[in-house]
Image 1 (cartoon, helix red, strand yellow):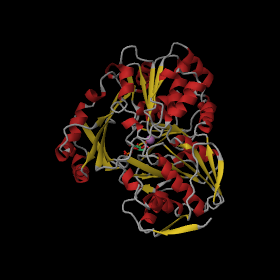
Image 2: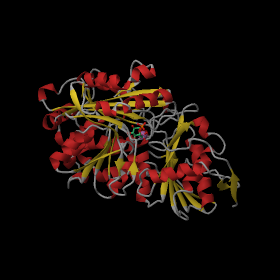
Image 3: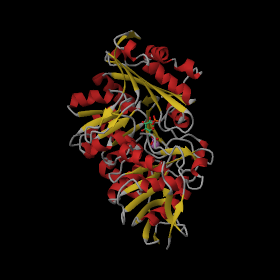
Image 4: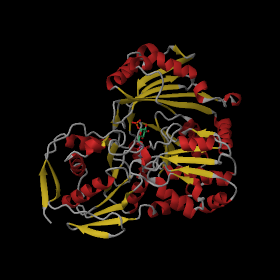
Length: 544
Ligand code: VG1
Ligand code: CO
């Protein structure tokens, strides 16, 4: 079959952000747009002739069309085999699992995660390397540089359409295309990690749960694992049919966007446990009866209870968290004598630490937790981890969390997002704080002494690569923090994230509402940033 070397010209702005390239579907639908990016990936990753590429996505609008394009380009570029999830479906952690299990060269994951989907919404693509994790910055930088100079891409002169609806192997210009079960490899991995018999017993008792797939990719995974393998009742799984527009929703598992689940968990006769995951299945939200577990606390609690899970019974090597994530996990690491690392935001920074066995568990405040079983954060893994803890400890979510606070202290934590702010205003807010670094240092703010103000930068302890400008930190002597960061995943204007944290060791003061406990820091953050004044917003879009 003949290869077509198609002449093209660069598109502006094909720069991967925190997690891949995300743009409006309409932008991706321009002729050559996806092709330019995919060719730029292929030109930046080394010699893959005859090797295996994993392809799959979260099922959003444009997923299947993009997969057909990628299959033709992979064949024209010399890959030997493509593994693709049935119907084009692979959750992000399942893709990571499959890349590792089948020794693939890498994978292309089609997702804009929790961003809404549909013809007028978002699409995304990212490249994961052979360890199953997101490509590190040196590769994403090379990909971006290539998109700026690209002049040809390779595809087949006569495009082939692969039937993705059946598990079967076919051949495209000498390359084999295997349409595989999207769930089974991942389900098998989960079974090898957790105490399935104990969870099955828990679910067979009077314990009640509710899992919300938010009409996104985890529906089929939850059905197989929670329902078929673990015996959860059908009515305990909601919104489990993946839709290409996620039912018009915003599959971001937080207190604002997962409203249906939150109403159930805070309603009358609420289940004992509630959980949700996001568009591509790498995030999780954990709820108890009338109780919300912050993602930062969740990471700390998983670490403190790791010995309840068969896979981690022998102990864990260490914990890593992204900079804005609260230091609750650090307290556990300290108490257990474990390694503890603080990285920039984005899962790509955890890969080296896990590959070098420096850490076992990783987490982000943005509802992401995971371990070295794959190289992505993993929503259902976190749900199973919690179920495993509940099965072993036979206690409520609320008790487990409040007991944890009593032992380690409570890190009050909240994130305020101001979404789709004009970029100029967002940059002014950041500059406003930067301009005060000197004056703030050593001064009193919100009744506390400021210890350090800086732009967070990170040197990777394994390969020594440096990442600068990863968020502005105002650190107080008592361990409290105010952090400002601009999002790297949005597709409209800029999103400002304001992260707030304070520590409370006094047991009698650990049961306040986080917004109340953090009120003085919230006021102080406005006084130093003029955020609301400069953006014209009088409240955050989302509070988590
Ligand atoms: C956000 C989160 C970050 C996460 C990233 C990708 O990035 O803050 O912690 O790793 O999304 O998650 P940003 O740059 O918008 O703050 V996902 O679930 O979109 O793959
Ligand atoms: Co996601």
